[in-house]
Length: 232
Ligand code: ADP
Image 1 (tube, helix red, strand yellow):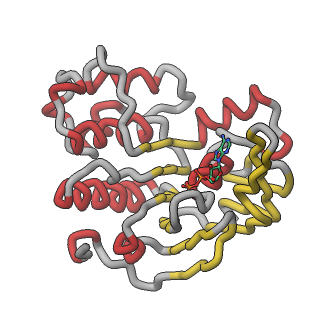
Image 2: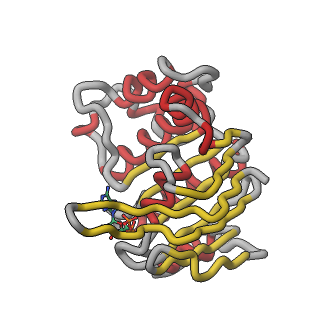
């Protein structure tokens, strides 16, 4: 199994109060699957993604991703895991403003062990012709394409997307979702997407619904609906 989580618990302390953000969560995914995570605000979606991405540590339970046993990792190895195995995409693109689109992608290759060819990736995300522009000279959708390129150039086995279309209009959202599907097909990247948009669920192999720190539904889609055919 590519991803296996068992009995994952996570509690946050804030002052006198504790809050259990994840309650005995189990999840397993095969390599190459696209999982869509749905659920109301505060249900634990980002916490789940952060633990899978090695950004945050679970309090208890076991988690394995791509052959890495995250429980056992020291800080240094966890950094290595994040660098080698995981690409992150966020709602806001977090590009470095004083670097061009290409340089933003290039920056990642300097910390990565087996980077892919920058030109290939810029082509794949449809941004080769805009490579010399600065982030302020790009639309939101174009900036998101560059942030996807930046994540992909590391050739990660896992792509974690937290509301990747949250700041984009309808048409651009569909284009970005199409790009994620293409990436999944081309590189066999396992992808997890957090979204508020329930319509997007139809394009994932798996639909994980969360509520109050638990996965309350785990559905399998046998046929995927392409983003072009999804309306919302
Ligand atoms: P979602 O992504 O579904 O909106 P989150 O995983 O971000 O939910 O948060 C789940 C709960 O955990 C929320 O109530 C949030 O306030 C709390 N939480 C998340 N991160 C922290 C943190 N670093 N410190 C304290 N509480 C947190």
